[in-house]
Length: 276
Image: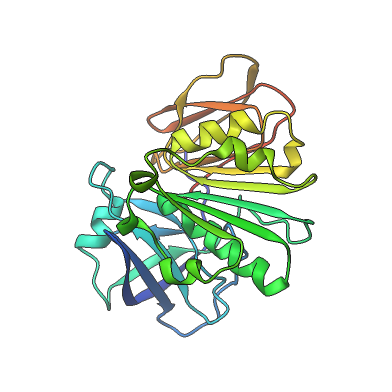
């Protein structure tokens, strides 16, 4: 079975900027100078790496200045994508890049938006915060990291009204998602992107909310089989490039090499997509 083809652009890495501990910003521009498609908050692009891997990374801006910028944290325990970018790819390298896709879109008309990020999950969430600030919309940002050296966009976030940075090592505890969700104004839209334990807590605390107002993005395949419900859909990815599920409310998944089985336990929507 062939993978569904995605339009690509040949791009050159034109800049690398330190962002946080083992985390860099990578900036790509089209080598032919053609106009590249813009993308809204939550979008990602697929980077075709020289080691044969295709890895999706969230954009930190729209591409309107004819460049794409992604934030990547080096994961020593990962499958090699982030390590390849950090250790092998240099400024001037030419890579194939997939056009943006968005399975984690921002509802820009919400009365209030609650943004929650953990670790490198800040990349799509930061783009959302900047967009909401530009629009003059009401929002709050909660950003958790294990250590202060891991905080990305630190100076910008410190200047942002309504933003809170939580450092696990300093607080001696994890970010209290339950309290944040309980205090959210009625009809708020809630977004979360981060490590699996954070997303599990987020999902558990939003089960009784309107599923259309709850949005999350998972990194890496989820290795949890649904405790209820029937098989809703099954999708195969021959090259094993799946990375996350966008989950609305009660959804679980089971990952196998090259396969993603999606189980639906209630009136929820989900898509097979990529994040990092």
